[in-house]
Length: 198
Image (cartoon, rainbow, N blue to C red; front, side, top):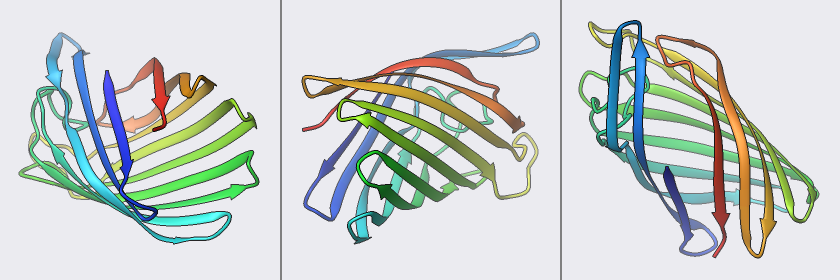
């Protein structure tokens, strides 16, 4: 279960935060790793750099605080230290119906964990004012040579979801898979989420 919030201070600056509670286990052959508690939490701010009627460009800085669950993609649950991330976001819309969001990021990892490059892409389509369909990809690649006990890795995730708004709250149903990866978890999941604008 995850909780994500954005709060706009004004037209240019936004505060962001994310916390997630996990009750998770993962198995590799006879070995099983499990954890219950908070995973890595994220706190930061975003600044809009430029905008016109159809395009926008922003820069985001985030600090990550480790928890008891998953903190690093290719490490045992509960391991991994603090991290910091810088992210460039660009968006393009075509009328009210279609938009594309692209984000590229660099994440600095503390201790023995490897730094990461990240690329997130979203295609959004609004068939009408109440529905929103999202097709997304999330990719993460380690950018340092692997070390003993910390192999280099990559993971690529595909996600589809459909949301419907009722009474100011959007209810979203979706799923994701990881069609490719190296030294990382193969994931398959269905999720339900709610979005509230205030």
